[in-house]
Image 1 (tube, rainbow, N blue to C red):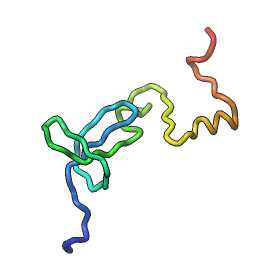
Image 2: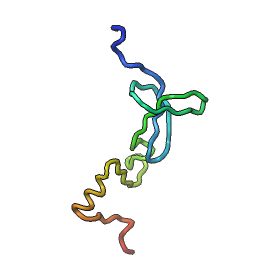
Image 3: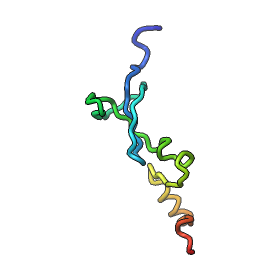
Image 4: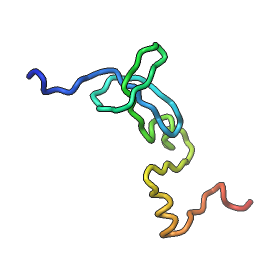
Length: 89
């Protein structure tokens, strides 16, 4: 391998912003934030909007994650969607 061309491979904490779940793994992702982990060490923090702890495929529940106002723009353009919880019984 050539020296000084590869990104640093290090322990990084990933945090699901939907569920609040966090886990530590190794990655080359660049982050600006850090977090103190359970072992007392400080690690880079990477926030993700969806992971297996909040994705409908894995949880069996439908949730809407709006990261950039897309849902509001859609509802303004096409009207609010009817959800199964909104239906009258």
